[in-house]
Picture (cartoon, rainbow, N blue to C red):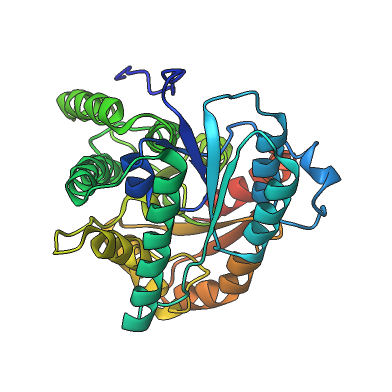
Length: 360
């Protein structure tokens, strides 16, 4: 087993952080303004404090983010950027503004629900506005040349993550799902230069071990849905004798699919990539999501799909019946799992997953 520590270490105390929550947030702009873009996604989340301010039937991820803000003692956290991915995020933004006094910078970004030329024009203005408010807050002008340097750095990270992701489907490579998700989560929290070097080394070591371990047998599973706070679900699947070979998650492949292409204006190029990246259930083009899912199923030789939703995630719950019907016609079994995000219903999930794997 390759052993490289991807645990995010304490950051330089002189390095201010800006938190982000949704993968439609352009990290390159935050980075170029002199901040470290840091995804707020705790491995062991809680909503105890946030439940005082937000209703219990609101997305537990949104509530856990507010909980993080209310309890944080991190002086490096200078603000957050909230992308309007759903109504729960709008509620989080308003509550954070009112109740979290430790972060003076709180910015809300609107994100269109389609990728038309008009939508791109609108989103480019939103990204330009983010650039302007970050310049005003930091007192630092964001130059185009610096943006292009950030693009190269973040594109490299995405390229390495795609290379790691491709190794998951190789039967001659022993790569635990927990390890992959730990690395992806680290990529959203660690400084990119440090992360890229570690991942380069890790991939090289994994390739050296190719063919030296027992082939991975058992049904090949794709996880689809919202996001995972930790790898509990992945552990349950693999302990039941299956193998997670790919995913369509915002804490997984949707984060690193697609590069920023060089063109005349960096802000437009950045906007284009983020708006047109692998879509989540909030976007209008359902057909595009289904076709992408089919390509993943065929390319990774998937035997079954586990459709995971966070409790009260309206977007993905609405999307599920369409997804299930589509893949049932493709003769790919689909199991829906609804998580409470805190791991409280893991016993029930384990029973259902084991039965599904046995059926496959």
